[in-house]
Length: 84
Image (cartoon, rainbow, N blue to C red; front, side, top):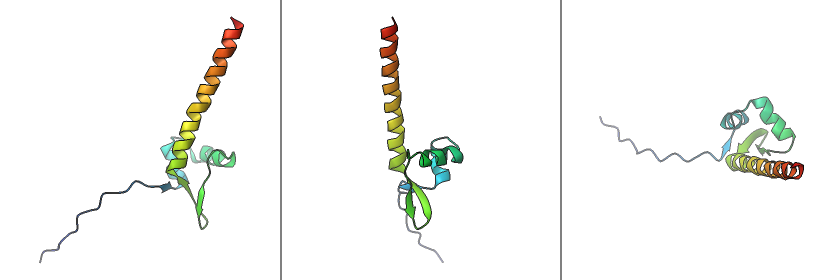
C-alpha cells in the first residue's frame, strides 16, 4: 500500500504575529512591547479579543525609528555647528 503525498505548498510569510512573537522579532521584551502599544507607537489588530501585530506595522515602526534618529542627528549637528 503506497500513500500518495501531495507536494507541500510553499509557506506564506505571516501577516500577523502574536505580541510575544512581535517582541522577539524586535529583540525586546514583552513589557517594553506593551509600553510601545500603550504609547500609541505600535497599533495592534484585534481578532475577537486576541491582539495581533501586523508585520507591516513592525516594519513601519522600524522605519520611523530611523527617521527619528536622522532628525535627532541633524538637530545635533545644527547645534554643534552653532556652538563652533
